[in-house]
Length: 374
Image: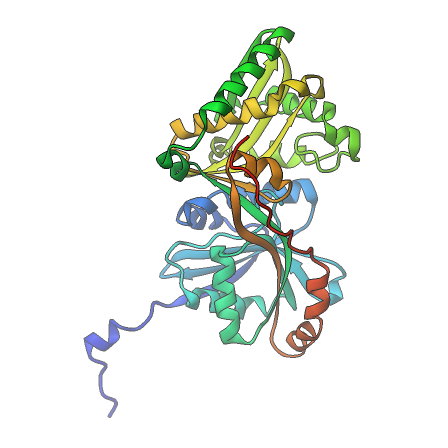
């Protein structure tokens, strides 16, 4: 006769997990994002929808539910020839490409996700994404237990500004910096009336996006490149951000500081505010005013406003570490691209190609010693 399970043993059983895969973007994405780390709550349905509308692709979504609550949602789109079975997480490069997981999701959820994923793809690309990303770490831990090959390649170092720590030390911003800013602002004002403004939430209308695009079309990015990396022009990534602003939650996170000279857009700084963290995504200015440092004047105003709004840290992302270190930023987590290759022959082939994948990335930039502020 089978012995009945004592109640105390029954209560120790782990909660049941259910993994599913649906065509399109799952409605549960927002449910997961709302309970993700505050830094990742922008990874919403509207975020992925904007990416699909702007960059193309037909998405499918893997979900893992625990006792009826979705704890992980992984959208993916096919990448390359169909016979390869490759896929990637869609999204925008800024600030990174990842997927939402609840803050209380554990490795069991990661295992369930990978067990369902192996039925759909041979390999999945996640990234570029920061070291320590919750979704990434969940899959890395699960991959070890499930026999998946995990390949990474370095993309760039990130830079972060801990305003709370610097202000506690009494070193940011320095009085000398504020004096220089007042000097530049005085001379910039000789070109016309200065108007400093901020855009967020319901303020994201056609005129606001047009102002950002107009500045980019006058900037160095238009003069020195093909313009495809511009964030707000028709030939750049403007379609993505306009679509993303259709989600009221994302629109509230999207933030721009604007400077106009005699009513004409002259400089902007565009961010994504995620809780107490500000992702600095783009800034640009009209080169006519370059000698008066309009970009610098604007982002100091922007950061001081951020402090008033509860922002304590700024993630400057990758690239051009010079001005970031001058303002007080230091090197943060590395940004990498990752491949998860399913067990069996695909994993074996992935391990053999690991060195090629790594060489296709970038090389870390040597650390240099620079002043905290000029």
